[in-house]
Image (cartoon, rainbow, N blue to C red):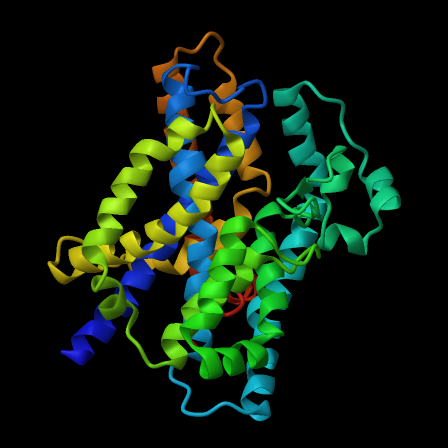
Length: 381
């Protein structure tokens, strides 16, 4: 039975990877609709986007952090400097190399993506040389958002200015923050060993109230969800077995949140953000329970091709592909709410499929390039 649970746990993680990558695409697709004010009174399309992109999809990257934390410590019988050092060396290949390469690709593709963006948004083109001179070449790999005229910072409940910028390839903020948090894995391991769930509970509260160090790349989102995932592997607990103990309350709370939280969007944006953070935690548990249950009942199964391409899809979709597809999607004039909704879904699916088949092509004909771009995640050698 324990072997079955471990297998289901592994398959659940593999099934969730491409789904969460698709959710990230949806999150980014909405950014192209700069003229939308996003109101629950704004019609079918507005309501759809608020439910999908403001409430449901924000669980995607936290789920990736959770899985990363769980897998980082999984199977370890002991913990010492040698193990930590070997894992850091491995992360150079799996995290640092793809991080640098994808940001270089985004930098090279910058003129094309900005041209597509200027067509859609009616904004003047940015000059790449001026951008590099203004921000600094290396800065673009860590936080390039200031060249858009928006620091992407926000003020938390304590009045602190919290940086929220992204590197040149927008989705790579996940890899950036993950690289930072893995540096603290010895401290995370020690704190979990000594305090267990107390440490995770403290991080959960800090995440929900959004109080953390105002340092770009060192986020409470990464630290909490990575540490939460780490808790299960360090303590030797199966994620599926643990989450199923709270299956009923988590399902009820998920459905309640899905119904009620969007109603706060127009009324109280701070309360919306606060309840959304709690909802993300609940939704993560719900997703693991739902998917593991469907896998156990053989209603769904892992698609190896989609699983293998998920990291590539995540990294590549904002480099030219999303701008080009969304420009075509938004090209028809005077779209009704239903048409906009259908085109939004179609555009997101097309972006996913283009990136997926790009990876399939590389994996078949240029496996070495595919391995480098994905950090050797699916290297069959």
